Amino acid sequence: MIPVRCFSCGKPVAEHWDDYKERVMKGESKEKALDELGIARYCCRRMFLAQYFDEKTGAELIDEILPFKRF
Image 1 (cartoon, one colour):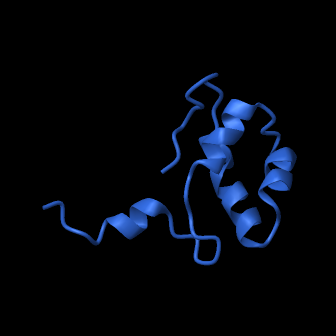
Image 2 (spheres, rainbow, N blue to C red):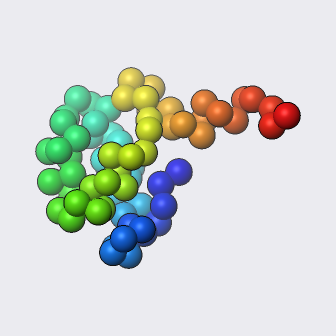
């Protein structure tokens, strides 16, 4: 679950999430993927690098947490 906009500068970032995730899962470096997607600001890059997902299955952190009960 990536935020729609960067927390710092407000630039829309969610539109690039699926492309970024696909590239990283194919083995491309995170740095190269962000460069080619045009994510140049360090605040926006942080939004992508801080999001956890399994690079083999593509499962995000929320997918791993949902099976557990709250209490």
